[in-house]
Length: 83
Image (tube, rainbow, N blue to C red):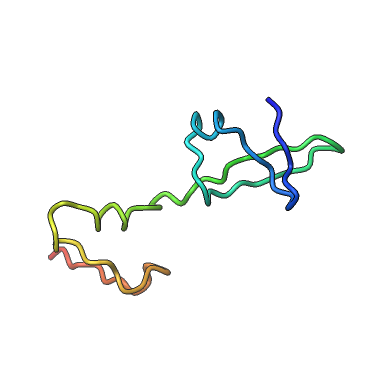
């Protein structure tokens, strides 16, 4: 399958590939130069919990989930005592 490089140096992925592999705008890829004229393009995996907060906020049962104040780390979370 052929593609083009845009005037801005962007690689255009054909619609068939984007549709088949569910590639969405904004997804990140890594590119590796194998040798002159040969390259490897690999989609980066999103973090395991990517989109979880968005999913929970979209839940039809409202007000049972509150978005955490800090999303940077889990250091400030307190673990409940189990008795």
